[in-house]
Length: 177
Image (tube, rainbow, N blue to C red; front, side, top):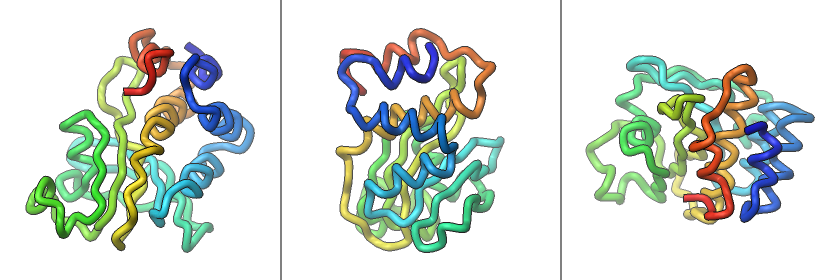
């Protein structure tokens, strides 16, 4: 299904259409900035799983807008790894106080909200996430937009790959899981 079909699928937020248009017209960095304006988190990034490393494909840093890419990190030291393993969105308001993640990851990240990016075959590819080194207020209401944006980013970055009907049906009238 082409990108615009996902953005125009029944039951989706109007913001998904705005996001899809912005991604097509202005590219990845502008689309990350759009997502970042909706969150209290400092960073919004696209990350790819690369063996035992996590590679930053693109980054928006609210405090340093000129920075467009972050660093690689050992996968085991990231909350993105948990998203890849659990394959569900992960929200952490304060990692220093959250018993679900304490001791699992040694990271300076305090607040995190991430969703899985799947490749054209439905396998985990990476994550789209907001994160901060400070505590941030939880914004779970944006998760449906992040999930739709994750699929749109993958399609944008890999236009020759065909996304399965099962993946795109995930964003249909039944809503975003």
